[in-house]
Amino acid sequence: MECFRQMIARIRGKVWEAYPNRLILDVQGVGYEVHVPLSTFDHLHPSEGAVVEMRTYLHIREAAHTLYGFATEEERDVFLLLIDRVSGIGPTTAMSVLSGLPVARFKTAVVNADVAELSKIKGLGKKTAERIILELKDKVGVTETWVSAAGGGISHGAADAEMALIALGYKQVDARKAIKKVLESAADASVEELIRGALRLM
Image (cartoon, rainbow, N blue to C red; front, side):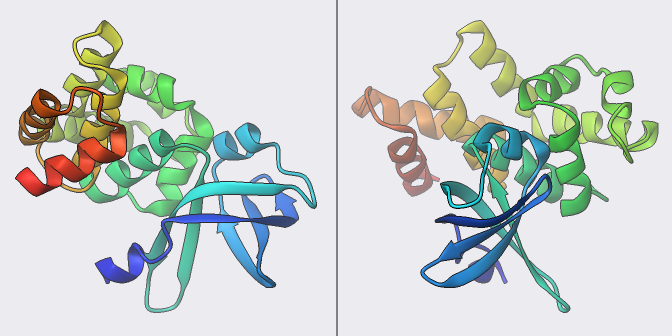
């Protein structure tokens, strides 16, 4: 199933139809329905006939294959963290989180354990907000990456690579060690090069 999920990592096509929560894209004559959060819709400002490109995630279920699209890698990383690392959170709730708060505010709310801020998201509730904070902050350790990036402790490129590895299931401490080793021999490595190099070491 993991192989199928990664079959469509990006998509580029012409907008046939645009709605706040989904787009229909013409990709060489095939219409793909891509579900998007409001943050992505606002970022892309898609209009009929425009060409857009998105990062994607293909969710496989017995009854349906659903394609989710994101304007930035950061949005997709947060989406993957929520569905893979927080118990009881599925794609629908993860999309509600991205639609309800900008990524930066979501990160701040988790770092500060701001249950009230997360609880404002439609359909979330206090218990789910508490679980998101508990599992992302204490179990996964992503807040250390976010705080380090905001304070200049690590570069934004290294932070992006670290988050991508955490989203893939690696521990934060292991991801940081591997990225540090890659940077020792390739200080100007891109995010993609950092991720590939770290994966080879892990």
